[in-house]
Image 1 (cartoon, rainbow, N blue to C red):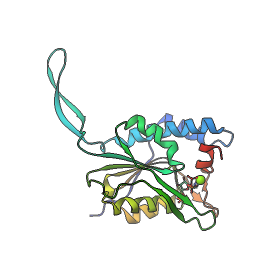
Image 2: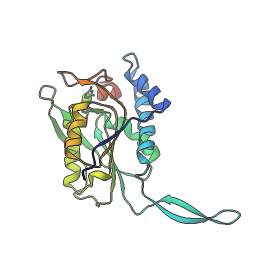
Image 3: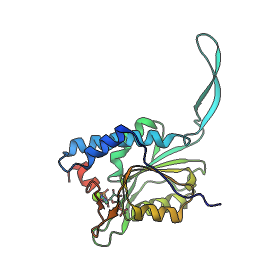
Image 4: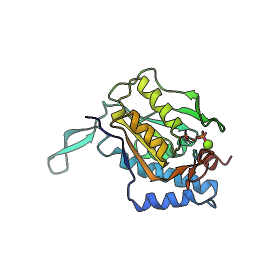
Amino acid sequence: MTVQLRVYVPPHPLIKHWLAVARDAATPSVLFRSAITELGRWLTYEAAREWLPTEETTVQTPLEICPATVINPQVPVAVVPILRAGLGLLEGAQTVLPLASIYHLGLVRNEETLEASCYLNKLPEKFDPQTRVLITDPMLATGGSIMKAMSELTERGVDPSLVRIVSVVAAPPALQKLNAAYSGLIVYTATIDETVNDQGFIVPGLGDAGDRIFGT
Ligand SMILES: O=P(O)(O)OC[C@H]1O[C@H](OP(=O)(O)OP(=O)(O)O)[C@H](O)[C@@H]1O
Ligand SMILES: O=c1cc[nH]c(=O)[nH]1
Ligand SMILES: [Mg+2]
């Protein structure tokens, strides 16, 4: 049995609100950054459900011993922000996953061919196969960048069914490519937009996420 890609668009008012702020062309860089941080926080919170490994234990309350569930510290958790724009989601993600290791991956699209190339790779040579990996990239457009990120990870031993992708705007071409290549993978996104235009921009989208986060 093949498990298809699952894409969750959490119906949460905070996620809808911060998406609206991020989409607005009149939002200045400082507020855009806050909006992306908030989206990183709430989408990571959603993604952590049934993904963060837990273990059963007991705690002594002031009154008696009772059963408790805690995060299992033995299982590695990693966040992989796709530079530059994925850095915008990282701060919010880290508030939810404070103990995660952060492995930076720098990818940039060629503006004409839209092909993604890698200029920074801080991934370890090999991941423990149990590692939970959360990728942050606000824009999944043609899918070139996220497919490159996934292949860098799976080549290093990451199990795609333990990967969660946190994005803000996802478009059909990227989701179709992920679905064709990886089963069990789950995407958390604030919205799925209709199209990608000839210049590689998601429409209606929110423009160039990296430029808006960093004011370039
Ligand atoms: O699905 P794709 O067509 O590959 O497009 C998505 C990628 O495009 C943007 O990165 P960009 O190349 O603009 O780099 P930046 O984040 O440094 O601005 C965005 O942050 C994604 O990583
Ligand atoms: O619309 C898009 C597509 C790719 N990258 C962006 O930053 N915006
Ligand atoms: Mg960019």
